[in-house]
Length: 123
Image (cartoon, rainbow, N blue to C red; front, side, top):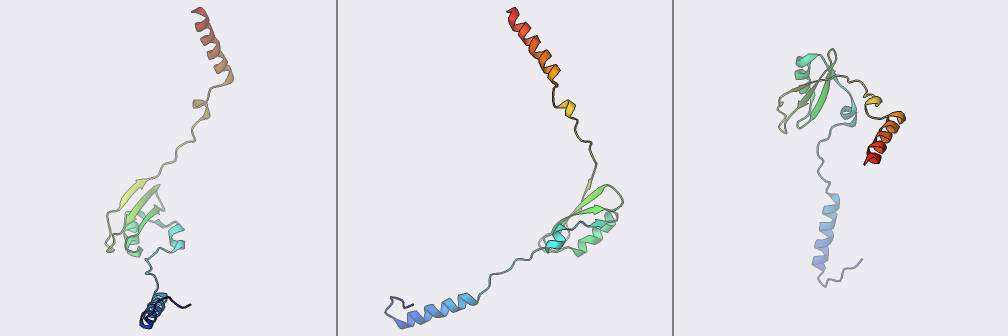
């Protein structure tokens, strides 16, 4: 496709820049492999969590489960690859909320309506 520029040297420079730009690839940021990001890792206690830090990439943050206790560890490395502090959490199961506490029965509702009707009819 001819360009409307009168100077052929400009055309050559433009074509050269286009070919250089086409050969450039965008910088790729380091990523965590999908299999590692979706996997659940278990360790034995805090010492196991500390040793797991050696397997992590710089800037990575992971939640690791304890294999023997209901605990988890939040592990993080900074951008330079130095381990940050390990945060420890305790996992507890809570019972499912009872529906009786959230809803009123039809009988209770009708009783309340009749009491309100009686209060308003007295006035």
